[in-house]
Length: 242
Image (cartoon, rainbow, N blue to C red; front, top):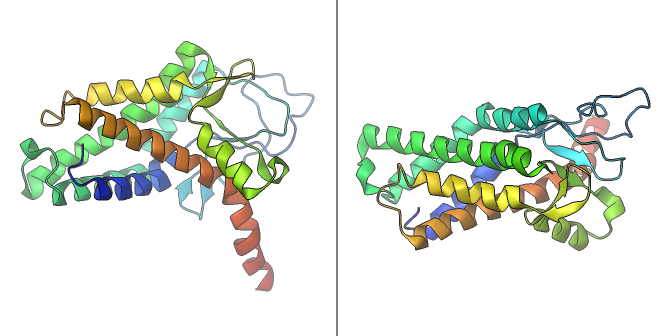
């Protein structure tokens, strides 16, 4: 998709910080005995990291597992696709693609940027809905990231765990399974994108787009894993000092 891989990779990391962070509320305490709905969880924490970045799809791996419904999975994908940071990251992608003249059929100038912006937004929406809604519903998988926290061991171990969650997820029964939602969902999104990326339909470009998507999602898991630690170390300390 990008003719200058270094720009694409950087843009992917920026995308991660915005759109890919948007997901389901993070339970921090065990569910109350009175809760009977499969959609109920403990009170959400930090809906926005740094006060801006959406953080809706993180759950606590140290509490009893509760599945979520198909309706909730649709909500996750929808929330991820329409939260306001997505519009900013779409502009970032479009800007880098314009500078590197990716997909020349879009042209340059204001019209070219507008077309690239629309394509970038479509990329994110397709990826979100496929990996967080449609595929999890079809294959009965849980699209949430289950944070292991400090109980998970060393920083290296937790980082490895977070990175590998793009290949391993939980089924609706709570058991670990191959993450077909991530791999298959992003593959489908890339295939659909060939409808509007008419200059980028070869195997190399499709593999590159898929790799960037999966890599971006893996890095987002790392941010989700360590954000509470970052907040505790820097932000709470600053508040207490004041």
